[in-house]
Image (tube, rainbow, N blue to C red; front, side):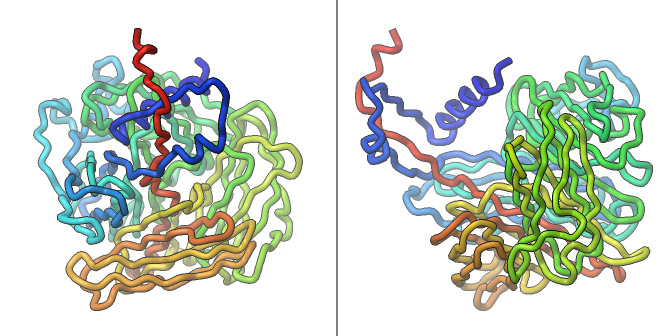
Length: 514
């Protein structure tokens, strides 16, 4: 099927769903100036977010933080609410038959998503102030959430889990994501030391049908098990990657393609020796990519890249450091074969300085997806996190679940200098918001200790807004000490898409309905 046509249909449908209406006009001839004047940036009226089940470990301690920044132009009404999703038995196959553990693992209570009652959690009282919640152990469910009215624009939910020991021990964090139909995850694995799950969460009243495709160093891995996976309404299902293929691959690209409906998707990558974290989806395939927020003390950085088409991609590799762009010695370029996953170990590429990886085409532009696996620590005290390629901060981006210490904000301006405003919200239990402006020089990455609210109590959110200059890319790193292990997790800061351009209708289109 023509994906461009699907994207157009999906985009129009999303506009209608998010803003509450879609206005169309059909002038006799294009008039760019008139169209530009007619279009208005209005706050979105409804947002959905999906949070995967955080852990199966009895030692897991999970915190959730919900936050909506204050947005001009919203009314006084609305609410935001997260509810438990019913976790489907991973033993249930796409056709409803029991096939053991072919689909991963999960609770097998024999109940569908409609049978399990959902109770509301994390209901914020007002925009501009975070609200938090906690859970313990391995029974915490996935969450399905909606926000409307003044709570919808820029709504952000962070899920952070500390696991004291065992596979995946350390700090795991993920931003709850909006439902979609297409996801790319370079950096997954079916290696013997790895236990990777794709978590699929369906927010809607009808079932979603999903295909999971795996691509290794030689191309697509054969698997019929990943085709036609059914995710029932308001339910979540973890799919163990190693059950989809008999091949052990250290570096994989996972493609989640939704045939019908929509889902939220994230990969939980757990390592027996190197801890683990959530791998969020890479931004849409593009000829140029930015992967921001490599910590200054990273001891190992691995780039995993994939191009979905048949054409090969040749990419120039640059590190945007605090002092300017650097070309890593021995890794000036990377060649990505069409349809095959390429992995490059960059070692301690930052050499004691924070940085962001910038990939650009050496010649013709070929769409690519990419992610970094970053390791901190040495010996048996190592911890892993992932940084996917991401969209720019744009108008505004937000990270929740920051404390008075342990948070680092990394901002990079790969092309031209830029000025940004960083606002720390009120604390979840008290505090006064504060803002500060920063200038990021062209080709550099700047790590900043973010401003904290005055009289902070609890946790707070950080909002980054582009004031002027070129595009800015960002990431937030949380750190903690877990028995001498330098535990950490990194979340990128893409534009929150809290507003949408809505053109005014120039004529009565009722005739089109006849």
